[in-house]
Length: 204
Image (cartoon, rainbow, N blue to C red; front, side, top):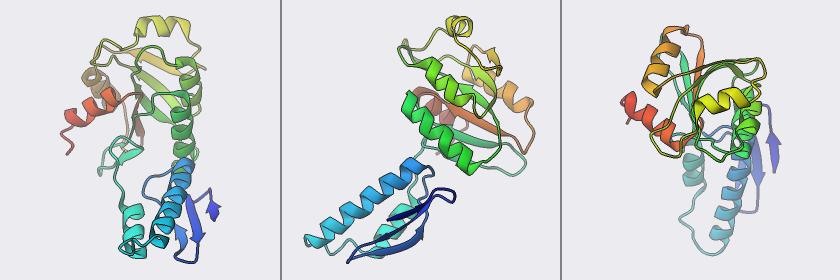
């Protein structure tokens, strides 16, 4: 297997299958690794008699996988680009930030973020600081939501502007009001938050 980490593509070859410059629909170096595992599994299954696993079926699946909340990009003409991700731990945040820097090189984003308690919040914000222009901190609809006032006083923010909001709706309206059409808005930190956002915008 050969990977192109800049273009997020891979070459893969066995006696059964050959793929050149295969670009998974889900971006990120970690998704290249996941894709390699899928290809290896399909090759093994094919060798064990599952002939219905065709090259075309594999190609279609990898090229058209849609996973809401996993580096989900929403683009509308005349509006900022939105990137949604349910990353909620340090490794997930690291993978997200790495993918963002590859897909949107040299860009920063307005980040709407909400976390649950008992997570490595400092590590996650340290990662986000690489790409964050500002933070809009919001509570989640769960008793497990962080105390925003507390983390605003205790965490190190790496000189990134931040503001606390009482709800996702209020935060989003304010962020959108101050955003230009070529800006990027990230919504990240929890399944709760991304799910609420998708419901709010009527996504199906």
